[in-house]
Image 1 (cartoon, one colour):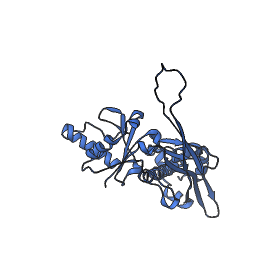
Image 2 (image 1 turned 180 degrees about the vertical axis):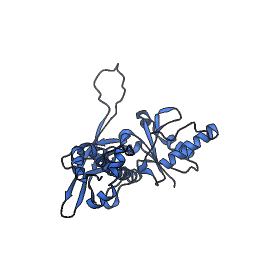
Image 3 (image 1 turned 180 degrees about the horizontal axis):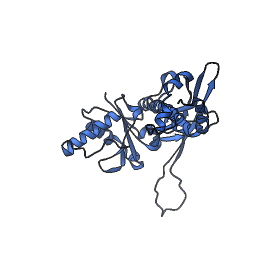
Image 4 (image 1 turned 90 degrees about the vertical axis):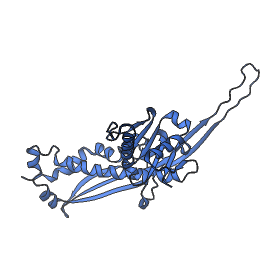
Length: 294
């Protein structure tokens, strides 16, 4: 019994919208920063900063005071492509027993969904890293480069233990950002080290705090969430920012977004293509805290 690989393009087409969104607009980081959908090329980030002056209400006359300052930044996206091919003959031979496993209950997903989900997961992983670390070959600067390169960013260094590093970041968060609520992003490695250190600190290494969570609330303060993300793995950086301070732009809602597969009879290969735009920007650098080792 062999799989029918010819149904794969039909499955991709039938589920195109869902797969596309899952691949490029549903990484973990995007649950905690602002997303702009339907963007290709450049898009404006508009700001309004208003100040008022409290004056004596008993005095007569009109004396207007206070300012409204309009400013603008730009988020620029680049066109990103994923191009893959699958040899139909190799696919048939390598997956020939899959239907038998599916029938026996050892596998739970149809073959088409298994292939699609695997590639969606790979794209999500790449996009997650791109958001934070960028991609030099595409000329895309990630959030880390933009945060580090701006003079308004609040920067902290030093600290020997992960607890000291996190505490330094928390102490540097400005009051205005804290009022909004702040996400403190770190790698999964740092997050596990933090949880282990807190467990050792409070409970003699008893696993009171579970590292297998989406985030932790810092010291009982619901305004501060410690959020592990894969995009910061290997960077030795910690970033604290309100939800609206960091932006990811893409073209999920744009007609030029492509997520498709087709069969090339001449080559006996399935061709897989994803095309989308992606870019990041920092809206409020003066509300962002960056920890670096040195």
